[in-house]
Length: 141
Image (cartoon, rainbow, N blue to C red; front, side):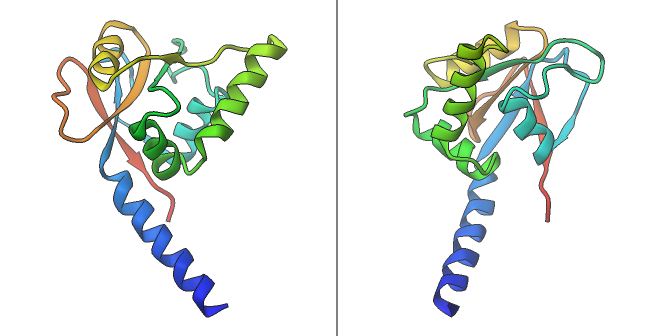
């Protein structure tokens, strides 16, 4: 039992540290400067589809097999990539919603988010993120 607790604590600390390696970006038209982790998860599971101003949220993601997408899902959203994919498939095939727009690279992510009003996406830290705003994520303790 002690061993499992130690593994869990180590994994949690590693996940918390890795989430700092990702940045959430939005179009400059988005009226927020920070989001809670729960709000971000609601956005990426397509349950929250409007910003506080009433404007539509446009979600962009990297391909499911992309290392950065997997890191974002696991460390920032605290979900497995296949869980997100399952949510998106259900929405699309039930006719209740649409999946996020998939882009091929972090550079394309920055370009599309900067060009699309209401857009949100993510990139690894260290990218040149011009013409977008970086959103602070409030993590639950």
